[in-house]
Image (cartoon, rainbow, N blue to C red; front, side, top):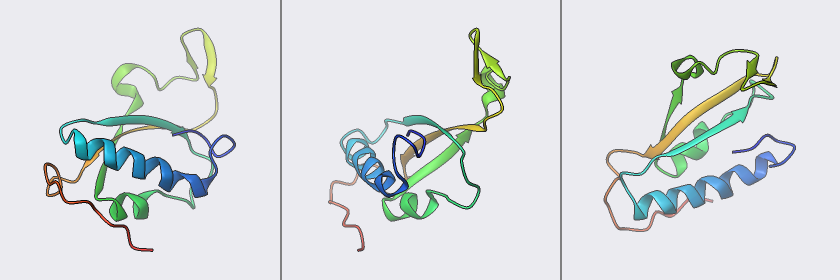
Amino acid sequence: MEDDELLPVTDFEDVLVTVFFLLRKNPKAEFWTTYQVRSADWSIEVLLHRWNLSCIEVQLDQFDADTPELAGSNLPGNHSIQMMKITLKTEDAGQKAVHRASP
């Protein structure tokens, strides 16, 4: 997912719906993504629950990406970057019924 300047918060559900349908076709697949944390007051937890998705945070220090500079770039700098792995919830993986989101 992208930061909120490129992707408004209201569009995050559209992205997660797409991820959900891709994962339904490939239940063992994983969707890896990163995002820049802009507000500690906002979370995708409700959307993950709505679409039967699980999320595991990947610690950046697992692959030496927790420094202020990566690959000769000043990114991420002082920004807080999080990486996550999104999968279908275990009980949902492999089922073929179409999930309907509540309005």
